[in-house]
Length: 288
Ligand SMILES: NC(=O)c1ccc[n+]([C@@H]2O[C@H](COP(=O)([O-])OP(=O)(O)OC[C@H]3O[C@@H](n4cnc5c(N)ncnc54)[C@H](O)[C@@H]3O)[C@@H](O)[C@H]2O)c1
Image (cartoon, rainbow, N blue to C red; front, side, top):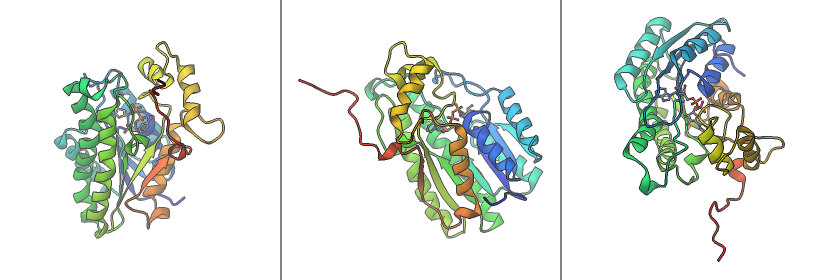
């Protein structure tokens, strides 16, 4: 693995989960880190998002690795807040080499598309798709100013390339992220800036780890955390693999952003223990 010493990474959704692990991976390789997070809840999303305390905890953990970190409260749907976070990062560290557009929300309790509320639609499209565009928009001018060598990694999902019932806004957003990534790779490639996406499968973070998530993953009306973890075994082809650790995707993102991947751009990389190679199944088979 190449070192990120002298380089700076900006990670959205850094308060917890994969965002925290991405920040720590960059820090362990010597990179300074800017983290941002909404640090409050969104009304249409039926589980708690990271708090300001979570964001501060990530900052402390990153600094304990011996690098510098600044933490900003910024909603990825708010261009001014992102621009301010980028400006604060550049003022503190002088540059931004990597964007990890990681922030996301998933309304696990959402209904079929014809019953989906406007609020649920706009929250997920707003955070998961518009938020990636706004994050790239905030960072691109600084990377372009610096010249060749920048790298962006957008977080999509396995459902960026497959359907998932009762998840229309999330699935549409994650498909959109891949189109956005390919377009950004084309637009920024001639400037020597690479853009890729990661497609994680079910990962053991708070986006899933709540009663609605357990019920949904296990297909049981009273599903528990154990039921959820048991059900997810069926989603991978590797032994003893249930919900992935958040480090799995963090390591893939840091590798994609590193010089080891210097000729890789425009790629949608699954981090899924083989999930996407599985044959599909029908969640509602008709037997008569
Ligand atoms: N966990 C999974 O199974 C899984 C699978 C595929 C893709 N993903 C994607 O991975 C990314 C990270 O999710 P996670 O699993 O770590 O979940 P998580 O809920 O633990 O972390 C998401 C983070 O994003 C932050 N966030 C939410 N809305 C925001 C906003 N508007 N502005 C700024 N920050 C915001 C949250 O506060 C939280 O800190 C998301 O894009 C998610 O869609 C997750």
